[in-house]
Image 1 (spheres, rainbow, N blue to C red):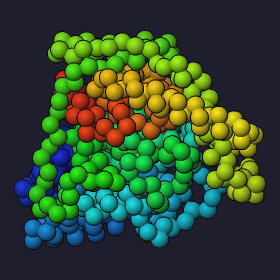
Image 2 (cartoon, helix red, strand yellow; image 1 turned 90 degrees about the horizontal axis):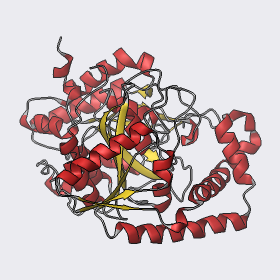
Image 3 (tube, rainbow, N blue to C red; image 1 turned 180 degrees about the vertical axis):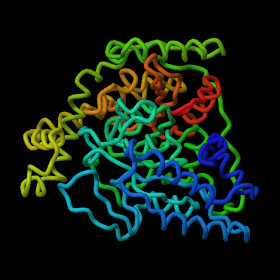
Image 4 (cartoon, rainbow, N blue to C red; image 1 turned 135 degrees about the vertical axis):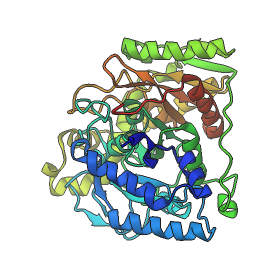
Length: 449
């Protein structure tokens, strides 16, 4: 059997087109994804729960609606996965930990509700690291099971990469969308802070938590962004019977190559991949502006941890006091550190954040995007770690939109990517540039090929 012909290998946009033309059914698409889950998840461990009955029931309902030309929106019939700190009505939210009892969600998180209203089929809940921090999950990297998939949105990234679902939701507080996307060779998109509603999601740090998406193409990320975002310039609900046109890629004029800390910390392969990308861009007339990070960058990782640990401790204080042993080692250490952060240090960190935001905004105002590696290197061959968030956390702290797209495979056969950063609320420009770069790179490999 030619598995490449399976509908699960389609991108969101292409599957949506086939569904509209009657060349594919939502039930067939959901079944194809669930067959992949059944075949692969015993070793990959990307899913906490697959709602087989619920997903098939929803898909069949959507097929009946489609036959009557009643389309729910641009995601009509598209199977998605939901990170298990995000509520899905009728399914348990576990948060990757036994520190809190699993609870059946009484309602969808607002983002999940938006997906459903746009026609998405929720396949189930994907693995998260415990309360979305650094303790390793059971999930493996689909490109090589000995490598980490990254975290904390480990299951969402691995499931999309392995063709178990078309798209998935994740969250980022440090690097929990961008890093696993890079490690798994897919597109990870994090919008501006508070760009997507966070109601119904277990918090890690209120100052940074941002919902993001995993897809296999940039145009799919843009489609999900239009469904999920707070402000909708195009009311897709009013035009639900028509699939919106695909995003128009646009070449940038000026790109800031971020020098300094990140290049010093990056592995040679990550720097080489960035060099390749920037060289291609330059050959197409893009001006590459090289410059350092602002002075306020010094100590910014410490400021991020001071705020993160304080807010994580505040949320988990009562549960931690009841039974500290229920919390895994790295999360437990973060809570202890947060309990010991003086109020003065928290205020200083908040002040440094504001200064860094202002200086970064001034630098990004002079370019279309900034470019740098999305991680220090390819996914480590180590299942006890999720990798470092240091290449992403400054942008989470700033609250600016970022995207990771795959570039090529490393010598070890796992993906390398590039990270693009734009000014606050400039998601459309970021996605447009990312789409252009994606077509230039033309990465089209998949795990197992």
